[in-house]
Image (tube, rainbow, N blue to C red; front, top):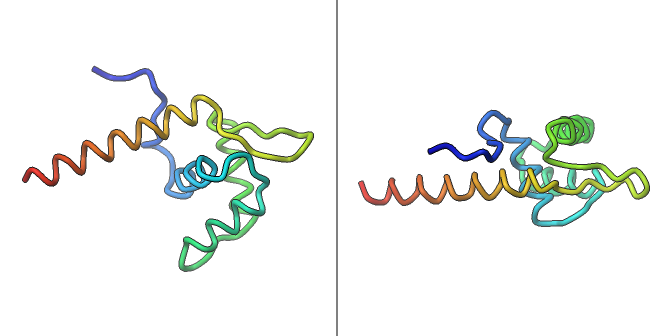
Length: 99
């Protein structure tokens, strides 16, 4: 049975990584999110790319941008989608360990 939760399957790794970082940091401006990804990606990532991905996540209703403080926040849809992905990853890891 399929869930009505929106999937992250069609998003790029950068989209998913930004969602993950935002879930760990809480509300944040783009610069700290950029620094977190720069620390993670061995080749770094351009700040403009981070801003573009954040705006795409806003358009998909995974993230909101609060204009009064320029902070990005996960939406309930974003939290549910991350939780569903984590559950899927856990299931996949369990299946792999049974083989």
